[in-house]
Image 1 (cartoon, rainbow, N blue to C red):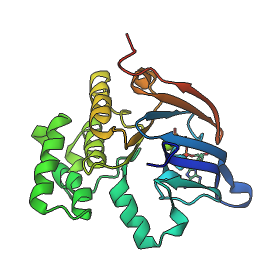
Image 2: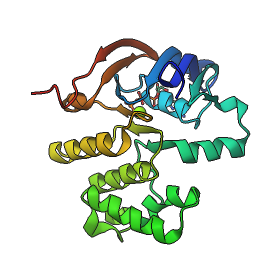
Image 3: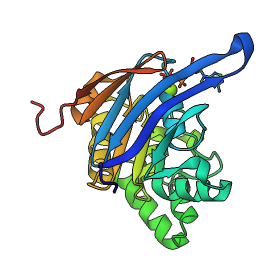
Image 4: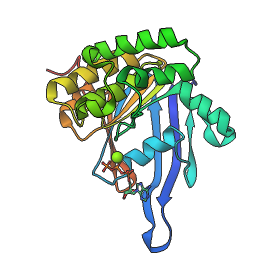
Length: 238
Ligand SMILES: Nc1ncnc2c1ncn2[C@@H]1O[C@H](COP(=O)(O)OP(=O)(O)OP(=O)(O)O)[C@@H](O)[C@H]1O
Ligand SMILES: [Mg+2]
């Protein structure tokens, strides 16, 4: 933990896609600090750059300019192997499109990050089943992704991102396919399982009902951070 209590520190990051007339400026100079022990919600209109920002924090993409220091590391200092190892250990990512592996069962999908981190097959399988049970999918552990509903696939994706105890959990609209009660259940689980004084959770959402689970809410518009407000944690909500 650095002395500023900052787990992610993005400074002046810009990112464009495409070239010439097709060029899109997805991020136009974003400064963002994410603190240890907080759930930060990132909100903003479609196309405002939310997924792009998560992709830079996770090292899936590199910025054109500026940089994100993550756990005091900068991705450009890493080799490709070091980057992959760091991401596999330190970061959990719930993708907007889930990105489950289609030929693996729900339990096998959830076991993947643990296997990557050297946990035995037996322990990984056990832990995967336990995590799926906790997220309400105990009866569907052996189903393939295309045998699951959208909301069930989304919960598998959440379980997979959580299960190896990442320092930083990045969730891209993790409740978009869930009803109100299941969405609350997932957010409660995220706070309980993924949050600790030496960890942080970032949640992109359009769902204002989730704001009560946030410690801080930051607004992104047209590639720029425009506003940051304290959230209303569960303890302070009615
Ligand atoms: N691979 C890509 N190639 C070209 N343009 C892209 C690509 N990915 C994103 N963009 C563009 O960059 C901008 C920001 O996209 P991004 O996916 O970060 O937005 P978002 O805030 O996550 O939107 P949403 O709420 O719809 O998921 C958009 O204008 C989008 O069209
Ligand atoms: Mg997005």
